Image (cartoon, rainbow, N blue to C red; front, top):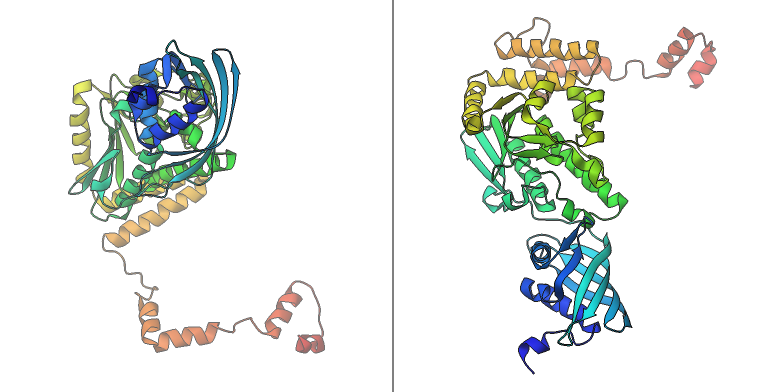
Length: 443
């Protein structure tokens, strides 16, 4: 028996066994050989991939997660040269560097007998997938360990480049984990003053990788993942650094949400943007409705989200969603020029301004003015006018550390003030609640 014959499915029951063997071996061509020419594979995004080329791309993407398939139960119903198959699988995904995800998957397939007597898939539909454990990828603290983004630090400037150009820099689960880790590195740094985020391959970011959404799990697990993305965007928005999004090509969905969490957005003239989630039947999760409404108002936010159109970069600038649109070949130069202007400023003043603007816009006018007043006082202190006559110039702290007389005197006066029965009785009398001295003593 030839090797090719031994690797063929002589019965439809053989297909599931061969699929597991070849997937576990990382053999993409062996997997493609299980499908007849013109077959269709339904992806986790419910979009069909038809033909060997499209199926190869989907399967190669699956193998990138280092899957291990174990068949649990299976059923085959034959009708002449056609068979209906169903199978349940236990699958693990992930590399040895991080805790893998555990999945339970159910698949339904139609297979057909070929002229040579072998059986191949005609339609392959992974009907449902349940995540049994969160995907937990390694989140390295060493920037050189990132695989799907580039992290470059040059003095006070960090440049993060989303680096999945073959997928238009779509936010895979791994890229999202790496971006979260990269932002944490920036957050912890006291030397970094400016962060620039860009995308590789003349595309900023095509949003969340919808082909992976079948791996997100059930409704609760999806909510947990979205909350994680919200924390990622909040971390970006709250950095005490100036953040700049350099947008080229597409910035849609999650990509647009990244730009809305940045302080400045500069784009090329050819850039396109929008929130097309509505046409996939999903809704934005981390800024597409919330931050957008705060930036351009509810009416325009409804237009962008409910219609799902792709807009030219110029309209983003007109709406106040982005700052500037420049000629395509001027994008990097304009970003560099902005970085230089930002670095020329008093960095403490920039930090305070960013803080009071971001926090004040979420508050009522008088609360926001409180932020402004406190910031003015802090500015005065930073510029040298820190001594206030009736403050103790850190005397209280020093006295506490030394167990000194100032600390002891203050605590002696305050420790038991209005904490005894007399204090409680007096408070009651003030409120019109009369008590006799006897009842006061009893209390």
